[in-house]
Image 1 (cartoon, rainbow, N blue to C red):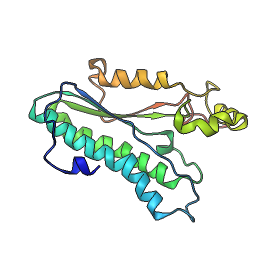
Image 2 (cartoon, one colour; image 1 turned 60 degrees about the horizontal axis):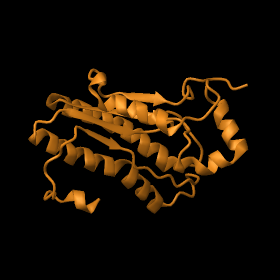
Image 3 (cartoon, helix red, strand yellow; image 1 turned 180 degrees about the vertical axis):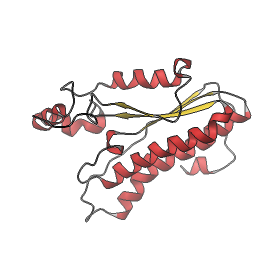
Length: 187
């Protein structure tokens, strides 16, 4: 992060028209025992780094009159309460709202800002839950599709949000969760 806090960025020109903020960590612990340094680390990586990248990326885009798209990766944790993970969930909820704020401020420059909220996905962050068959099956039951998402399914939605095909989508959070947030009662 310190590199980006300096206004003397080494590279002032970009040739692409999209930014994807996908950095995230989770440090699970009960709120009563949550360490302040873990809270700060989680918010720095999950929220503050996205803010800094949006700020500098959009400045470069504006100064070069480049229209484009920014996509922030949030989580179903921004929508639902999950136990023992207050920093992750609050950072992802804040990122969801940073998306809306940035979309409002940057739309006049032709820069769209959206977010995408994945459900449980076969990824490095979820390795422990994925390997635990009981946890994997329990999480699968929370979706209409009775399965976890694949990274390629997330990537396709990100690609869509970056492309001009989504040119009228701005300031929104798209759920890519197999129906987790919509599903009510679980049998």
